Length: 316
Image 1 (cartoon, helix red, strand yellow):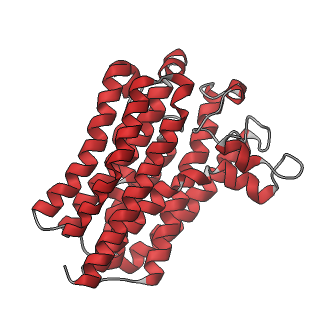
Image 2 (tube, one colour; image 1 turned 135 degrees about the horizontal axis):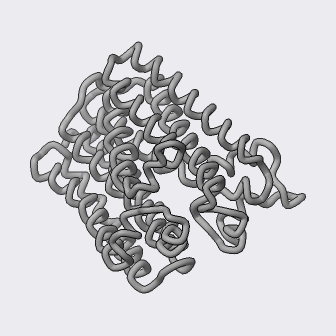
C-alpha cells in the first residue's frame, strides 16, 4: 500500500470530511514548514529568548501558508492539465489526489487554499502588530509566492522559478521569521541554519522535478530540471544537499552556530542513499527518493533543533 493509499483508506474506502481536507492539504509534507519553525525557534532559545504563544502562532501560520500553497498548487495543476485524472494510474508523492479521486471539487480545493492563506495572513498580522514590520516584510511575499507559485496569472513555478522560491520561502523566510517573532531581532546563527533548511526544501522539489521531467516537458511546465536535463538536475540536487551541510559547517567555523550543530553529519548516509537512487532511477522509480529526501529534511531539522537546545543546556 502506498503512502497516499494508507492515508485515504477507511472502512468504506473513502475518508470523512476532516480526513479529506487533511489529505487535500498534503499533511505528510507539512513537516517542511513545521521543521523550519522548530529550527528558528530553537536558535532563539539558544540565545536566551522564548515565547510559547508566539512560537505556537508562528507554527500554525507557517503550516497554514504551506497548506494553502499545496491546495492552490493541486488546483492549478489540475485545471492546467499537468495533473489530470491520469495521475491515478501511478503512485505519486506530489498531488493529494483529492480532486482526481473526486473527494473534492476543484473549486473547493481552491477555496480551501484561500482559507488557509487567510488564516496564515491573520496570524501574521497579529504577529506584526506585536513584533513589528519585519513580520510583514517576510509574510506578505511568502503568501504571494505561495499563491502565485502555480496560481494564475503568474504561475511562477512553471517559469523555472520553483527552486528559488522553495529555497527562499521554505528556508530563510520561515526560519528567520520564527527567530524574529521570538527574539525580536535576527542573528547570524539563524541565517546559517535558514540556508540549510532552504537548500533541503529545494532538494525535495528538485527530486520531484527530476522524476517529472518527461511529463512536465509534455505539458509545457518549465523547471530547472527540464532545462538542465536529467544529468544537470541530478548535480543540482547534489549541490543543494551539500550546501545544506556546508551552511552548518560555516556557522560552526565562524562560531555563530554551536559545535553541537555538527550532529547533522549523522544524516550523511541518508543523503548519499538519496543520491544513489536518483543516479540509478528515473520516472516513477524515483517515488522512494522523494520520500527519502523529505525524511532527510525532517531529520536535519530535528537534529538542528536538538543541537541548539543541547548547547543551551550545556552552556556550549
